[in-house]
Length: 532
Image (cartoon, rainbow, N blue to C red):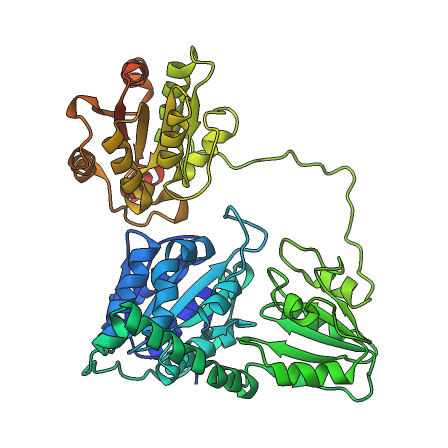
């Protein structure tokens, strides 16, 4: 076997290629972006597979479904909130089933390092009634991904792999195995399975329910779920999942006697193994990264008679944020070594900020000046670098909820009486999910102003390509039906400040829909071009 040092994301990507991947699709989002970046990097050589960014996660999931329908192996990857966008095809893919192996990789973000929530994707797998694989480390990420394609074809279902930030963005040595050939794709999916008319969907849903027994049997047998019973320690039993297993093993080595434990990396969780552990011990500690998913199942409504259960729900472990070895140590009753305190060293808080020379900064300056005489104005913003416009020195935006919400919320705000109601959205986010709400606003000729910040890239996640930038963006906006007289393009540079303020003021004064495109290349992309 060959050994390679890989990010967790890279281990998943390489495993997919070695499993006979034919096509992979994604939309960038931390902490999942490096999966597609690695696939694109290695696809330029002798590897013959498709690796493409998509306009959004729903499209990515549907393109992967098309590959699976054709009988070939496909993978789709995105961050946890991206699964919200892809939920419709994802849930229905459990009803259609998979023809070629279909693997959905979701990277959760406990602690919200770069996200607006820390939802737990295990709930999606449970809701869809499919297998969920949760690796404890880089080797399992590789091994599980390879096996996930086989499992998908064995059970004719998509398989979800759940990563978390700490695994996705750390590196470790991984033993890799020889690659298998891609599927020949000789047989397409059965049209009656893949055409979800109610009569077909009811039949397929019954098959999905009937298959649950097989999934549970696999969860009991797989090597990824491991039960270790210590007959000399009847006091404590630990149920531990995913990356938290590493913290548990590190701390357990410092205990006088290792507790019995059940390592869970495959769901539906192994009920028989869990019952064996419960019978063995007096007290159960549940350690899991994310929500108290397993803990809720184990506790039920009234708990387990005669057993003490500890975890996130009783405060033994914090209900939010990432787990750490110290938190696990405290839960296991192991003293935590205090860190070194240096009283004299006090560093100033340094919040994130826009890059020096960022075009968004000049747009916000012009917008702020144009709005200074409006006491009831509101700027609805979106997901991107420009969200930093909420912070000093700009203090220029009032909302940021989810992809595309700026346009929708500005329309709703306008219809509730907000004036001026302004939406600020990036070019890539506009292509992702801003087009449809703008079409809605065009239809109603809503009294609002949409500012599209066109810097030519998906800057926040690593400068991936934008699907709506430059002159094609202008045509999209015009094609949606926006009035040509109220589609304006400005260049956000200090020398154009007065002119930009004038244009924005004119469009704010227009009582109907107007669109301003602020176009200047991302300063980081421009710098990279000059250096190359």
